[in-house]
Image (cartoon, rainbow, N blue to C red; front, side):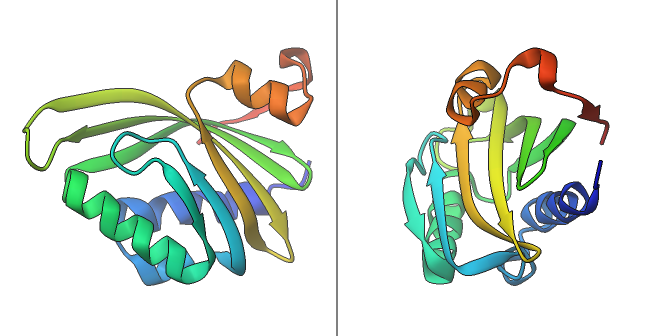
Length: 140
């Protein structure tokens, strides 16, 4: 199993947690399509400018009070499936949040060309056409 995409996805999460939007964007193709379903920033974002808009939306909703804690990565060839826990506090409400985050990224030439967030692993597996039995976790 090639771990190159998993290692790159770890870098993506590190940049996200550091709020380093330029390091984050550097891991994405200029024509990326990102489907975010996270509360407060649920939309489709396209291209690097779209990722910058997503980051502004994220900051407006969550400030610096949100972070991703990966629990498992699954290398599926051109796709990476990642299970994480998001922990944060609403910027305006102060409400603490802990929720499961499931991300699927498609890679081309070492860059993410498509990413989508899901409410559940089962939903992501259906989209990928992969069974639970076919998964082999790469720990964080």
